[in-house]
Length: 411
Image (cartoon, rainbow, N blue to C red; front, side, top):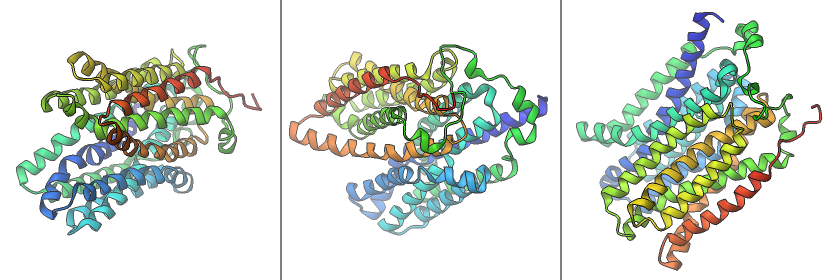
């Protein structure tokens, strides 16, 4: 493999990572920060504004299978460009909007664009161009995407603080996604096997370097993979973890305030949670060549369970630390481990469809915040919802421990 070819594939990895970093920073992590400025101008209620956030999350899930279809039909470059155009339209609608329905429409467009530019095309590109460093590259890719959640709020406060206009923030996001679109259009090209078949054939496969890591020898067909119980155990593990994380993101700040934790300390704990989340993905990518992702997933679920239990009684610094470490590690590692398990169990050929379907099915996790709010309203505290989450995680841990690699008929 030539130095030019090595540089090219890592440059493509950089473009994919920049996309994941940006869409994370510009949507979920920054929307909650810019919303108060919009609410102040339009006099929306919190529920009306929150509906836009819900539409964003809903459309990300509903559009989960869309990138697999666009990749097969039009290619990965066209998928990134279509996602960029959709996101740009969403930013423009919100920036120039004059009412609630404009905001809802823009948020929905951002959700569709997010799905087209997120993990499905990113992991597909890594499979094509970095088959010899797949686990490490996927872990690093997800880490860089997670750092977008750390960067989003400061970006909003900096732009709005310097311009005194929330609309300038959305126009800035429009310009940024168009720059990324130009990079994708200029540099993303055919897969490595088409450009240099020898490189692809001779590249060592890191997934086979350890007998402790299972990797299928045959690429499963999409419909055959959907018939295995292992697929649904993996999907259920990610869905339950998302269920817990969305509940935590929605109510942790309120819950900690009810327990007497100061705003500053609660903010610090949530920021630490995000940092651990990002770091755990990089660590998982390095460990996945020596430890089967199944056991990384078990560790993630245990961490998430510890985090939920600690959060339920987090009226002291020790519990806050356990919450930040456990929940941050749990979500970050689960996000990585489930993606790697799909690759290791079912192969690369139909991975975009399998990953997209998983993203679609995890939309069910959106009921978490609603259920937690209902239970807390009856119980007078959010401790019980978080403890119930921990109990569900314990059941899920048993299922994952008992899961064995699926057997392909051709193996």
